[in-house]
Amino acid sequence: MINFKENIGKKVTISGFAEKVRNLQWVQFIVLRCEGKRIQITIEKSEEKNKDMVEIVNNLTNESTICVTGVINENEKVKMGGMELIPEEIKVTSTSYPELPISITDKNAANIDTRMDNRFIDLRNDVNFNIFKVQTEFVRAMRQYLYDNDFTEIHTPKLIGAASESGSEVFEVNYFGNKAYLAQSPQFYKQMAIAAGYEKVFEVAPAFRAENSNTNRHATEFTSFDLEFANINSYEDVMEVEEDLLVAGLTAVKEKYGDLIKELYGVDVVVPTKPFPRIKLQDLYKELNERYGYEIPDHDIGDMNAETEKLTSKYAMEVYGHEFIFVTGFSKAKRPFYHMRKDDVPQGYDLIWKGTEITTGAQREHRYDVLEAQAKEKGLGEDIKFYKDFFKYGCPPHGGFGLGIDRLTMLLLGLPSLKETMFIFRGPNRINP
Image 1 (cartoon, one colour):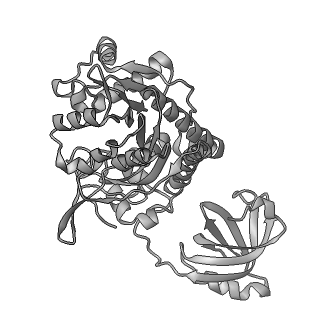
Image 2: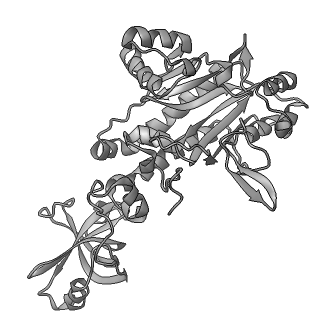
Image 3: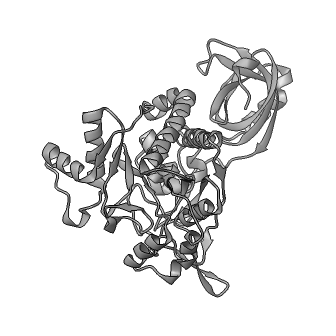
């Protein structure tokens, strides 16, 4: 991507979309869009040398792609950055149909499903286009934090022979006449890596959940940022790493895109202070009841629901002035069998950000006999034998967590749905494009 200001007075070649073509009596203008940046191309019709280019522009449709060679000049009359490109040559590299299926400039001109059907056009809108620029920086910075702290990146299988974790909400596929499943998470394989002797591992990869849910924050396929590390003393160690990881990511995003995010999304990127607030679930229930008159429904006791999460963030801001809060002390009935327990309480947490749970993290149970008992308690047996075998031959204490990249991006930018923050959304009613 050429920096326009750094090339004032120089000859350059720029390729991009002809976002807007204006053909006036004496002059032609093209707004050229390249990687979300724009520059005005100005062609004087009266100049003989421009004859061929004038003819090209006469037949140029909006959103056609062009390659332009010319000199960038300063021109204070040009609203678009005070610069214009005076072309010497214009080549049309592809021609757009004149009528676009949806508007590029007004993302609200079509409903969300129509936009998803035409996602390749929808993403040309500045608000949508820059989502993935921001997301890239967020993920890059978190990845860099892990690289700098000696984590090893692994790539685990997404086709597995046994239903992972709970055995529910999985997609079954035909695997050469046998049953296989799409992985809900890399959890088992992260722990296998710890059992193999890797002290710190992570993966950024797709995960699959066969949840027939049509909320704004659920998807059947999403991108998960998972990590696991060994030789911890408690789940507090896991929470501290997550704090550092998120601080690293949000710091980088604020430095690179803070102004853009404020301009396009109306959101101030806040880099959180450490430590994040912490509260036990039973204490949280009491606080929410006393402050807001909220009573947790019977079927959710021992856990949280969407309303609890929203009120928890309200509480965190009012009491601590903090966007993040850790909640601990969940019921063992509501947590996976592989969470370590102390006094029968799972040694894990949920992390709430902007009214939404973004992480369930924990210290894992690494002792074979205890893990076996907890699996039986959950009704799991031979189907997870391969997983339990990881712990028969020695495995250090360890813990970890996962983050949904798409959900993080939605919350960061204050967008209404994962449909906005996933490059291509997958849900119960959407398998195309």
